[in-house]
Image (cartoon, rainbow, N blue to C red; front, top):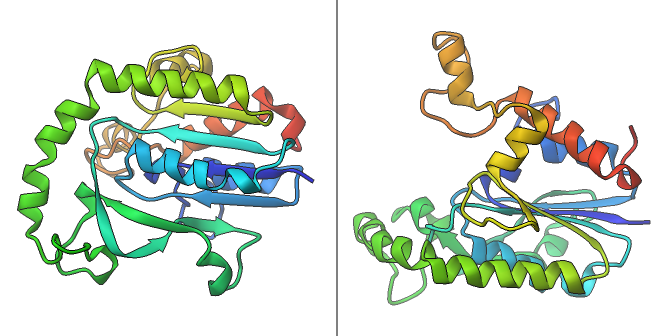
Length: 239
């Protein structure tokens, strides 16, 4: 039976609610295969997402389905002293010793906290002030958002799509990587008919619901996107 792989940043995160209402959870619940693996972490950069995908290649079968999220390219990463677990939820990796096979060696610069053991950095960066890490974002932003970086990623993605025998779907909540092989924010908005965030919900309800300034999706958008993918790839899901 096939396996569902979802690798991304906070946009692949779980709902943290009893009702599984975020798009990865909905897809996992309706997946025809027996196993699923969701890797998610806030502020994660695209290179780390690709690294996790590539490290898992030895386990991905021809009939599996892979979904990759391409975040903003402006992010940079810093090395962790102790790797963290990259798998957020899975019906395969139950035991801690099994999860230890799934590691993330970096943390997004914006998620670094000096006093947090989970984001303790490798020497010589150990204990460095957050403001120093964050102040150096600017160079990373310039480099990673350059036309050279974008074209490099486009060529990598094109190679993925032509070479790998399994189904791979790549999407982005930004409009930075523009090519036929990636569904960007504009493409998704056009095909679903709308784009709805927690900030939109906050504005619509005068602050009763949603979160001010939060550009992550509302539950309405999560469901619409899940429905869209189920219709787009019916061979993998129970309707």
